[in-house]
Image (tube, one colour):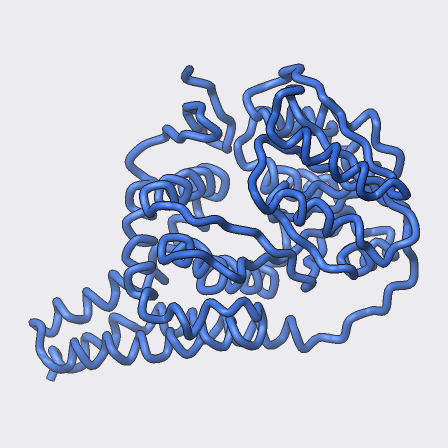
Length: 378
């Protein structure tokens, strides 16, 4: 009797958490949204290193905004960066747009992306600053939606959810489904249960005065997770953070599994040192090890198999709802067959994150210090 019941107890944590995330998502996406009352001038800061086939289309998406006044400011470290010709092509293609390229290789600290931001920031014309990754594609209403919460003077920063539709290959699908099955559910649950105290790096809009209150971009240059630190520092400075439900799109390219897993491990170790308590606690909601535990305690008998199947039947339904109803990214149910493998790799990554403090980022090796600071190793 005990062997029949224990497998069900094993799968309760991930089952309960999955249902909680679904409830939090429903509450968030069904809330009443305030209409955009103002459209303050905006500077979009884009730190760029390297380029790809989609760079022009991604950059151009920011030139088609239904918004009255905004500046697009690109920051690169070297004149021979492959992105420079693309940006110059963009400037020529949109002569009526306020686009500027800043080339400055001055190093202020180990986070070279933040160095680009520091170097370009003096050219920012407006008091609302948006930092947006170079691989992000947006729709025409992006600025309207992201800037609307700033009508409330208590709001210091607005960050955006992101998705990755149109993935190319199984390896990139494994990474993209992490947004759908893990990142977005986790963020919405944190928002519902404790409020927002961090930012997501794909898109961060911040008031100039809030940025100044935390010491500006130089306050972030010693951290790898500059997005988390920006949001957390603005939050601790007394401003409110808002989450925009306007999804920006992270454009992924075909990569091998080793590259994807290396990036996942870097993110995992970065979050472990940034939010140690919450990151450690996330282990109890990992579905794959608990499905395996259900099998073990049942002695690999029918109750354990049934518990594992029940867990993944419910989990598959939940992630499909997230994908089709909320993110609309086309990931599920197409890639549903990869979900157990993705969960296994996520658990392995979670375990490996505790076994070292070294990460590689943009070709450089770093050691992560408690609190998230990084020390260059090469």
